[in-house]
Image 1: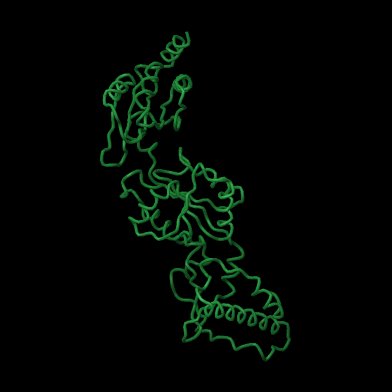
Image 2: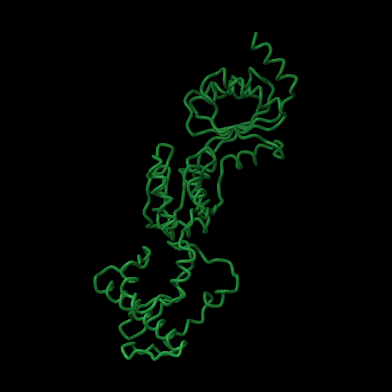
Length: 358
């Protein structure tokens, strides 16, 4: 601890984290005086230990009763290697060491708080999976995390606002998607490094799985910041679980290319590996994509899932040729598709690909 002569300099240069900033000039003054008092008291104790006389100007220390920590689960868990509590706006447990020192209920912060703050000042990036469509799939941990973080980074703030409103979450939010500039990504990483925790969400499902999110995760990981997953719904896993196909080995293709030649090439290469394939497709292109799949492997078994977990959820099964004709005859379709393709015989795929090349 620095000598008492530097108290004013330390207080002037100390920057309190966001959740400690008072809301008025009077509270700001009380907070500063409390911090100076603790600095002087610590310096006086250090001088006594060295055999020096304590200055008469040092205020009398509060009684041990007023400084006694509360007997709670927080104090019992402290120092015992217990699991961390629910994340707060700074990514740490509730500050149980805040205690009143007089009848006016003024608060001061003891030395243990500043030591813990300086030893681990950074926050946490929480990668949160959100419901695909049914808000009942939101886990209690997801709701608690969104309520306690300092900021929510959303793919589309309009979708995220409905989720926050449904669960009465008042946390502020901003947009982070594939169009976000690198400068804003670095600014979000700066907030985490400064002690604020941030939740990363997408419109539906898990961030980073064919959705925006990897850029912010990479920026946080490059700085050595904590990145914590909040697992939950994912259309890839949901469709694979109801397909009935072998899921021991599968390949996820995300969204396929737009050009027919590239789509045929992807199907030929991936199906030749003898693995289950999973990909996402727009309702405007799903019939055409399945038709291209039927040209490569007409008998490939397909499970097409539409509007997963929503009111008009639908699961269709059949060969690639059958489903392409069925969906093509239905005209306009709504809702994104998750297509699962079972493994096909490599010889059939290779023969069909040779004929197509000719």
